[in-house]
Image 1 (cartoon, rainbow, N blue to C red):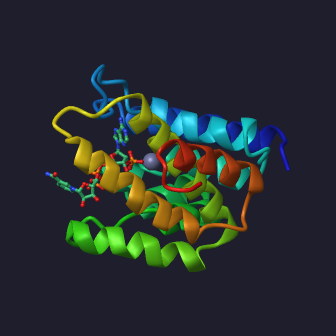
Image 2 (image 1 turned 45 degrees about the horizontal axis):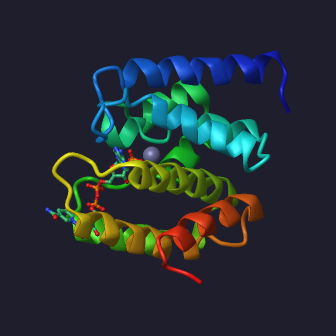
Length: 181
Ligand code: NDP
Ligand code: ZN
């Protein structure tokens, strides 16, 4: 439940992620600060998903720190505890694997992920797909964007049955992209 301790941990996660991602930018044309993404994912979870589970929201703030910065799981575990570290672990791609394998693994791992990890994944995909709808990243072709939507739908299809509001919002995106009727 939310109390002084969990609010402090949530604030600490915002600060930690902001420091870790400080030199990173999104792939959009205006090079938005990267931290906008994890904060936006947490906002999607509360505003649209009506999810107020503090472990999920803190994991959302931290979800790209290990994948995209020098952060280690043991650092996350020390600062935020084992449960949050395990959610982050579930949503982190192993970057030592080839890209194709990583993309396939996301589709497969979605099926058996914990509910908390599925919630982070749904909000993460929703944020990224809306980003891609707004604009094509520098040096991406239309073909690459359209392949990304097709792949993301395969991941999302394996996350279903988790949060109807987030899944409905994702279906709005897929409908706009003409991937569903
Ligand atoms: P990437 O994984 O390279 O890029 C997408 C990821 O970048 C997102 O998942 C997101 O991850 C992050 N991101 C940062 N900024 C943005 C933004 N503005 N909008 C959306 N996402 C952003 O993409 P893929 O490798 O999946 O490429 C898409 C498709 O293109 C694939 O199906 C692949 O087959 C193909 N491809 C084509 C290439 C080419 O044409 N040269 C090369 C590689 C792949 P996060 O949440 O972690 O920030
Ligand atoms: Zn992300």
